Amino acid sequence: MTTMHYKGYEAIIEFDEDAGLFHGEVINLRDVITFQGESASGLKQAFADSIEDYLRFCEERGEEPEKPFSGQFVIRTEPVLHKAVSTAARRAGVSLNKWVVAALERSIR
Image (cartoon, rainbow, N blue to C red; front, top):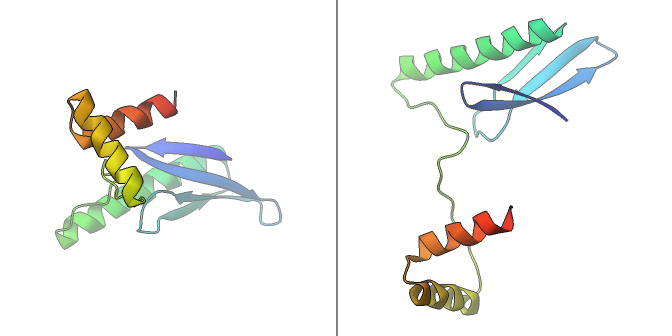
């Protein structure tokens, strides 16, 4: 799948062969932002325009625009695993948060 980026926002792109249009949708937001264009340059401009419209709309309403990722998420696990991870963090001399972040970073490398 093709992606585009603008001001930290990411969109996925699809081509509708029947309509002859590119369609884009900003991902990783609760808010829905879509756009379309007949060419790559038109699609790129429509994406930028849609993000700018969204940012302006939020400003007019006095709301913070949603960011794709806040850096926070909640995880649920079995109590036994929770205890084991907490114990491992204490043994390592770091907070549970730092221990989990390090484990996640190791897992994606």
